Amino acid sequence: MADIEGSRVDRSRLEEIGMGDTEFTRDIIQMMIEDGRERIRLIREAYKEQTWETVGREAHSLKGAALNVGANSLAELCASIDNTVRKLKTTIEESMLDEVESEFELVKNELTAIVSELNS
Amino acid sequence: MKVLIADDEKIARLTMQKMLESFGYEVFAAGDGAEALTIFLEHHPNFVVTDWMMPRMDGITLVKTIRAFAESDYTYIVMISAREDKSDIMEGMQAGVDEFLSKPVDRDQLRARMRVGRRIITLQETLRHRIRELEEANRHVKKLQGLLPICAYCKNVRNESDLWQKVENYISEHESDVEFSHSICPDCYEKHVKPMEEKMRRKKEEAEARKVLELSQSRS
Image 1 (cartoon, each protein chain N blue to C red):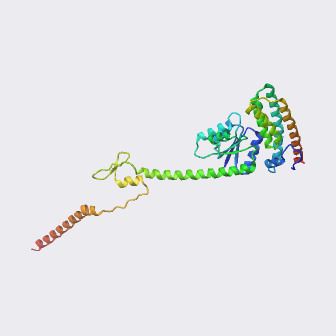
Image 2 (tube, helix red, strand yellow; image 1 turned 60 degrees about the vertical axis):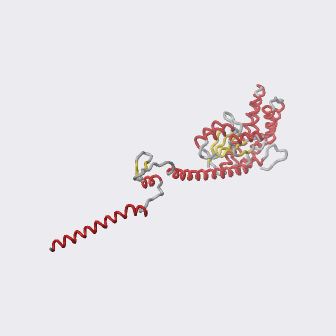
Image 3 (spheres, chains in turn blue, red; image 1 turned 90 degrees about the horizontal axis):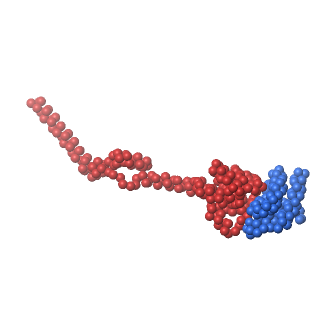
């Protein structure tokens, strides 16, 4: 898994956690894609209801998952949301959620491509 | 050795599990603190690797609860957290955390922390073994301490059941390493044995004198 310029995923991290087990790496990537989609849905829902604790908690979880697969930019955006709503106790702009969602799409596409590479 | 992982984030949990299994540990995994506590009480793992923020019971509460049980076997606890404030670390240490690791968990760092933990656990086990030996030795010594009633005439002693017994029997029962060999001290020899020997010698002389007398009477 070679790193590509402009890459959204640190592939060395995927290699580190996969330890040569391609099936495990595939499972983790699939889990990240499904989990990320669900977390973003929950963040959007909580944002509408202005339940900031839930927004922060879900962003925190997504950050953890993102860090584990090497999606560091996505993790940073999630950390920013978590810090704003839970540490600083202020609200966030919806544009922050859009940014997270856009970054997640890029991560998802790259992870899907990595799975294809692993399958080939 | 057994490791319990507590993390509500599924990917983090699975990646840590895979790492720890590759190091040769038997791994149990829980999705929150409450589930982790149940597994802890059932399997008594040597290590707990826990996240800080979790639903139902957070990592700090889990650590405090585990430490409150104060089992004889030491549990080495590693806290995985993105929280790196000095106050957070102090709070974790006060709760009973042995080591911190930041997210995402680095394989080499995790392995190094586990090695440190193994050393600590082994040292604790050795120390506990030594303490047990010392306690056992101390228990033997204590048995022969305190006030022991002894008869001024026959020198028998009164044991814990209020029964009088010979001093050698008492000591043999209370200190298994002691054996007695019977002998006579010089004073007792002069006081008891010598008069008895004198008495026996006199009796023997009297008997011989009687025999000589009887013989001379029978001849005449």
